[in-house]
Length: 200
Image (cartoon, rainbow, N blue to C red; front, side, top):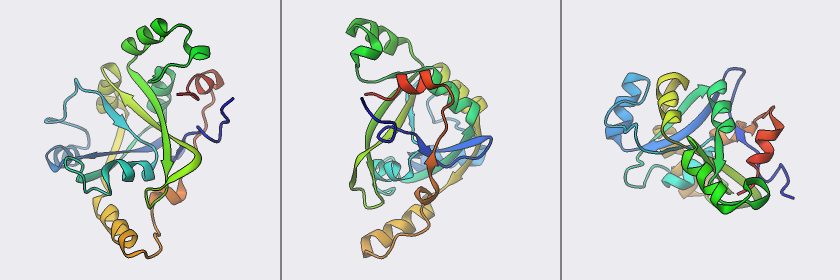
């Protein structure tokens, strides 16, 4: 059985909010920063992925160097909203003890506003960390509308910090001051939800 350590949610959070990360082009990031929420040209009808792990965001966007991901945003959302997402999520990969038949899982996945996948966690040099997985949360439909209109408390442009950290990484100097230094296990009180999402 998969241990909780391998697939636990690690994040920066306080009593009311949790930080997730996304990377976008300036055309999407700048209006979002100005408005304090996502606005056009952000598309509400597309699935969007939020990531509590800073290191995995760095891996995904290449420290803000990949086309269309030049601006890294730290988005503080309500813990109530984050917990709603977990409660309404389905794993993006089939797991027979959790889902029953493949057709049943496919039907759940097609109807779910949130999907979860676990990818190998990374360190600040983008190397895989053996035995650790990082949660990725894909939201669509109702979940995107709630995310944009109700869950978001604040959006911060982390691009200057990301560029500074990348310079340290490339020069092989010690990388200090990364948000990952203060990430800690996120408490999921509903053990049925946690058990349902630990695979995949």
